[in-house]
Image (tube, rainbow, N blue to C red; front, side, top):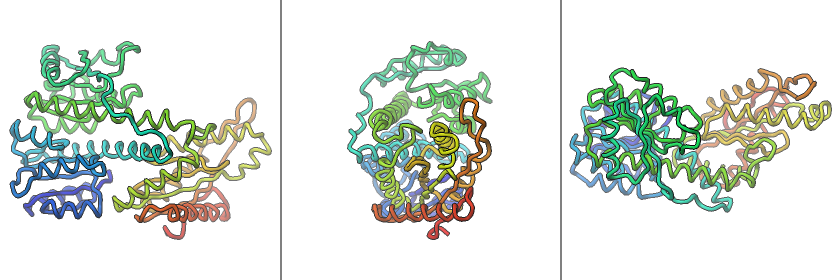
Length: 463
């Protein structure tokens, strides 16, 4: 998983050990000794996650974390507090300062890496939603409403009804939420008219190896369309860090032991509910406010009106992160012949099926738009020229691997596409620069067609 990590620790040995581990996991890593150095690094390369030693008394690290979370430009950076004394007071202070998790030393490496992967998944989702929200506001649509306009729903899942009741009592003191209790085997059978919970609190405190089906439950909740956007907090045994890591990798949003204080478990649950509510509002803006104005009515993809402000924000993210992004232009080969030989209705069917194939094989954060009759644009953040080349060839093969259904008695039709690729290095987000990159991708597309079609060509600036 790609991502940039910033390590803040006065002790050089701690920095070196953590940096070696992060580099071995294929992350981009910056390391510094104090907040002044950290501020300089963050101004040059915005991290996705910070590992910060909060046990040091040389400077107010808790205030530093609060500043990061209070700044809209940095609020989405994930923070893991390391080196914290493992007491309820110290843990709660770190979480209250804005840390997403607390890892006392000695840290379990398996759990640490699982937590980093989990937080980076959330960070990527946040970036994608905020990017689209910013694009919608640039187009003149209203900002997403503030979260918590309605009372959230919490489901408590427990193999042992006694523990579930205790959890309900503990959470009930700090959460203003509607709570329901289910046996894990019954949660998928609840009535369709029952609201989908915003938060699942899953009691796995008696689990040692995944029995009782709780591993499958976590992944099942994450994979189902109706519960995919719900958050999950799993209660794990205190002496099973590998079990906690497994739940995180299966899709849980947070893990905590049953022994933590009521204040901590409530704070964690409240943070997950706030995140879920914010994501819901951002999705509503895109789904309801933008759909008619910025989508192509035939394919349901974004249209040219959406592309320019989105690319400007993508360029700004590229400048902050220091990562390249790719632009692809895809064009259906001999599309006019399809319309002339089979009719425009058949041509429309090809466009719809092509859009579906492309959409299903791109990342959530990638932009796919129809910008012309048979021309499509793909924008891929954090993508190198090699990655873009492989992705373009993969998409090209997906198109010609099976024929397109023209409907009725008409025989299926073999269709190919040509693809042009250009890479933008980090730079100031300006329309003229984006126009140049798109023109380079267009020129590469023309080169692919001139070379015989059904090919991928790379723009000169990316070669």
